Length: 109
Image 1 (cartoon, helix red, strand yellow):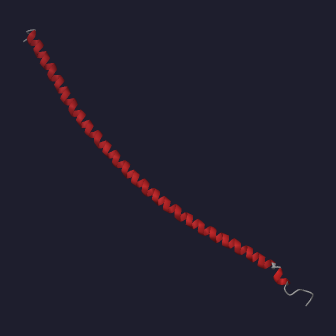
Image 2 (cartoon, one colour; image 1 turned 180 degrees about the vertical axis):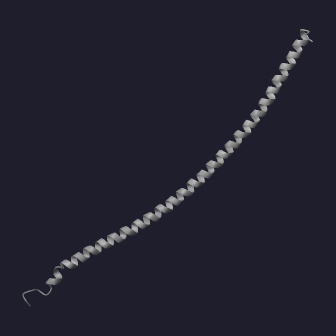
């Protein structure tokens, strides 16, 4: 038998088999990495959606609060305008009344 042990070919793997095993390991690593990346992308999309929904809720809430504050300021301005007119009218009436009393007291008419 040519001086070779018949089991010798099984004892030492051939170069092709070693290369195929290495390539298979690399292919497995690539496939698992691809799956992990797909999973991460899905998780990121879900997180992004959840964040967008939360931001939208906060934005609507903030907009509503600002609208209520704006309405309150408008009511305060209307009340202040009305109070100013009443106060200014009272001041004018008082000034005219005092002027009339002074004119009568000094016999100007």
